[in-house]
Image (cartoon, rainbow, N blue to C red; front, side, top):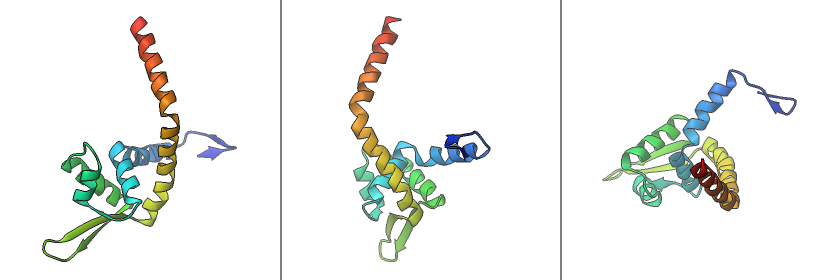
Length: 125
């Protein structure tokens, strides 16, 4: 996929795009960031992520689990204790996610200014 330091398009791009769609949505990124701190229970995650519905959080956790990023652990008790944590693969994903979050925070003012300029120029047209 990388040739002489440059990207070339191959069939692998479709696979990479599929993975980025799964791990790059806003809910997955937030779940990975939270789970990087350690295992959490479902309701703890839900309370920590503003605006996420129970259904979306369930789907997000299932997708991350099916891709091998998250492990669901059930501890037998009444009621059962279920927690979610990052696998080794999930921990490795947290590195670029953390870098992307840091980049976003460092550049948010420039992005906001660019959006404002764009909106103003679009309104003039």
